[in-house]
Image (cartoon, rainbow, N blue to C red; front, top):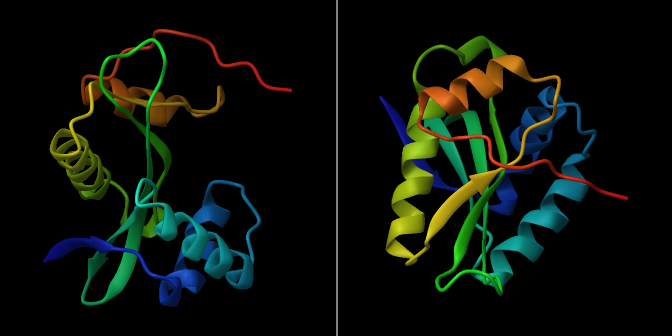
Length: 139
């Protein structure tokens, strides 16, 4: 059975490996530091999907207030499922958990960004009811 649990710094190695699947090179040491910093805010949880204590995927969240919205907004900052475990509903479980967490936190909406080249991810998000509504720019 696949369960969702809060990620801890002890999960740094699988977190680093999962982030590597998204193309982000993060060492286990850096993952420990980032998980500690994020868990300290109370607004930036990371959750793992696990089966028999084996991490299969993760979702990172960030709750924030924005001037234009009456209630907080939840942003999915990272979502990845181990390539060997895809197409088993794990991504769906992680997003459902995030939506529940956002609802409990009183958030007005849930948003995410996705790299332009991730067509399969875009199709997945659309299948969950997410709609494309903007472009993101960065410098």
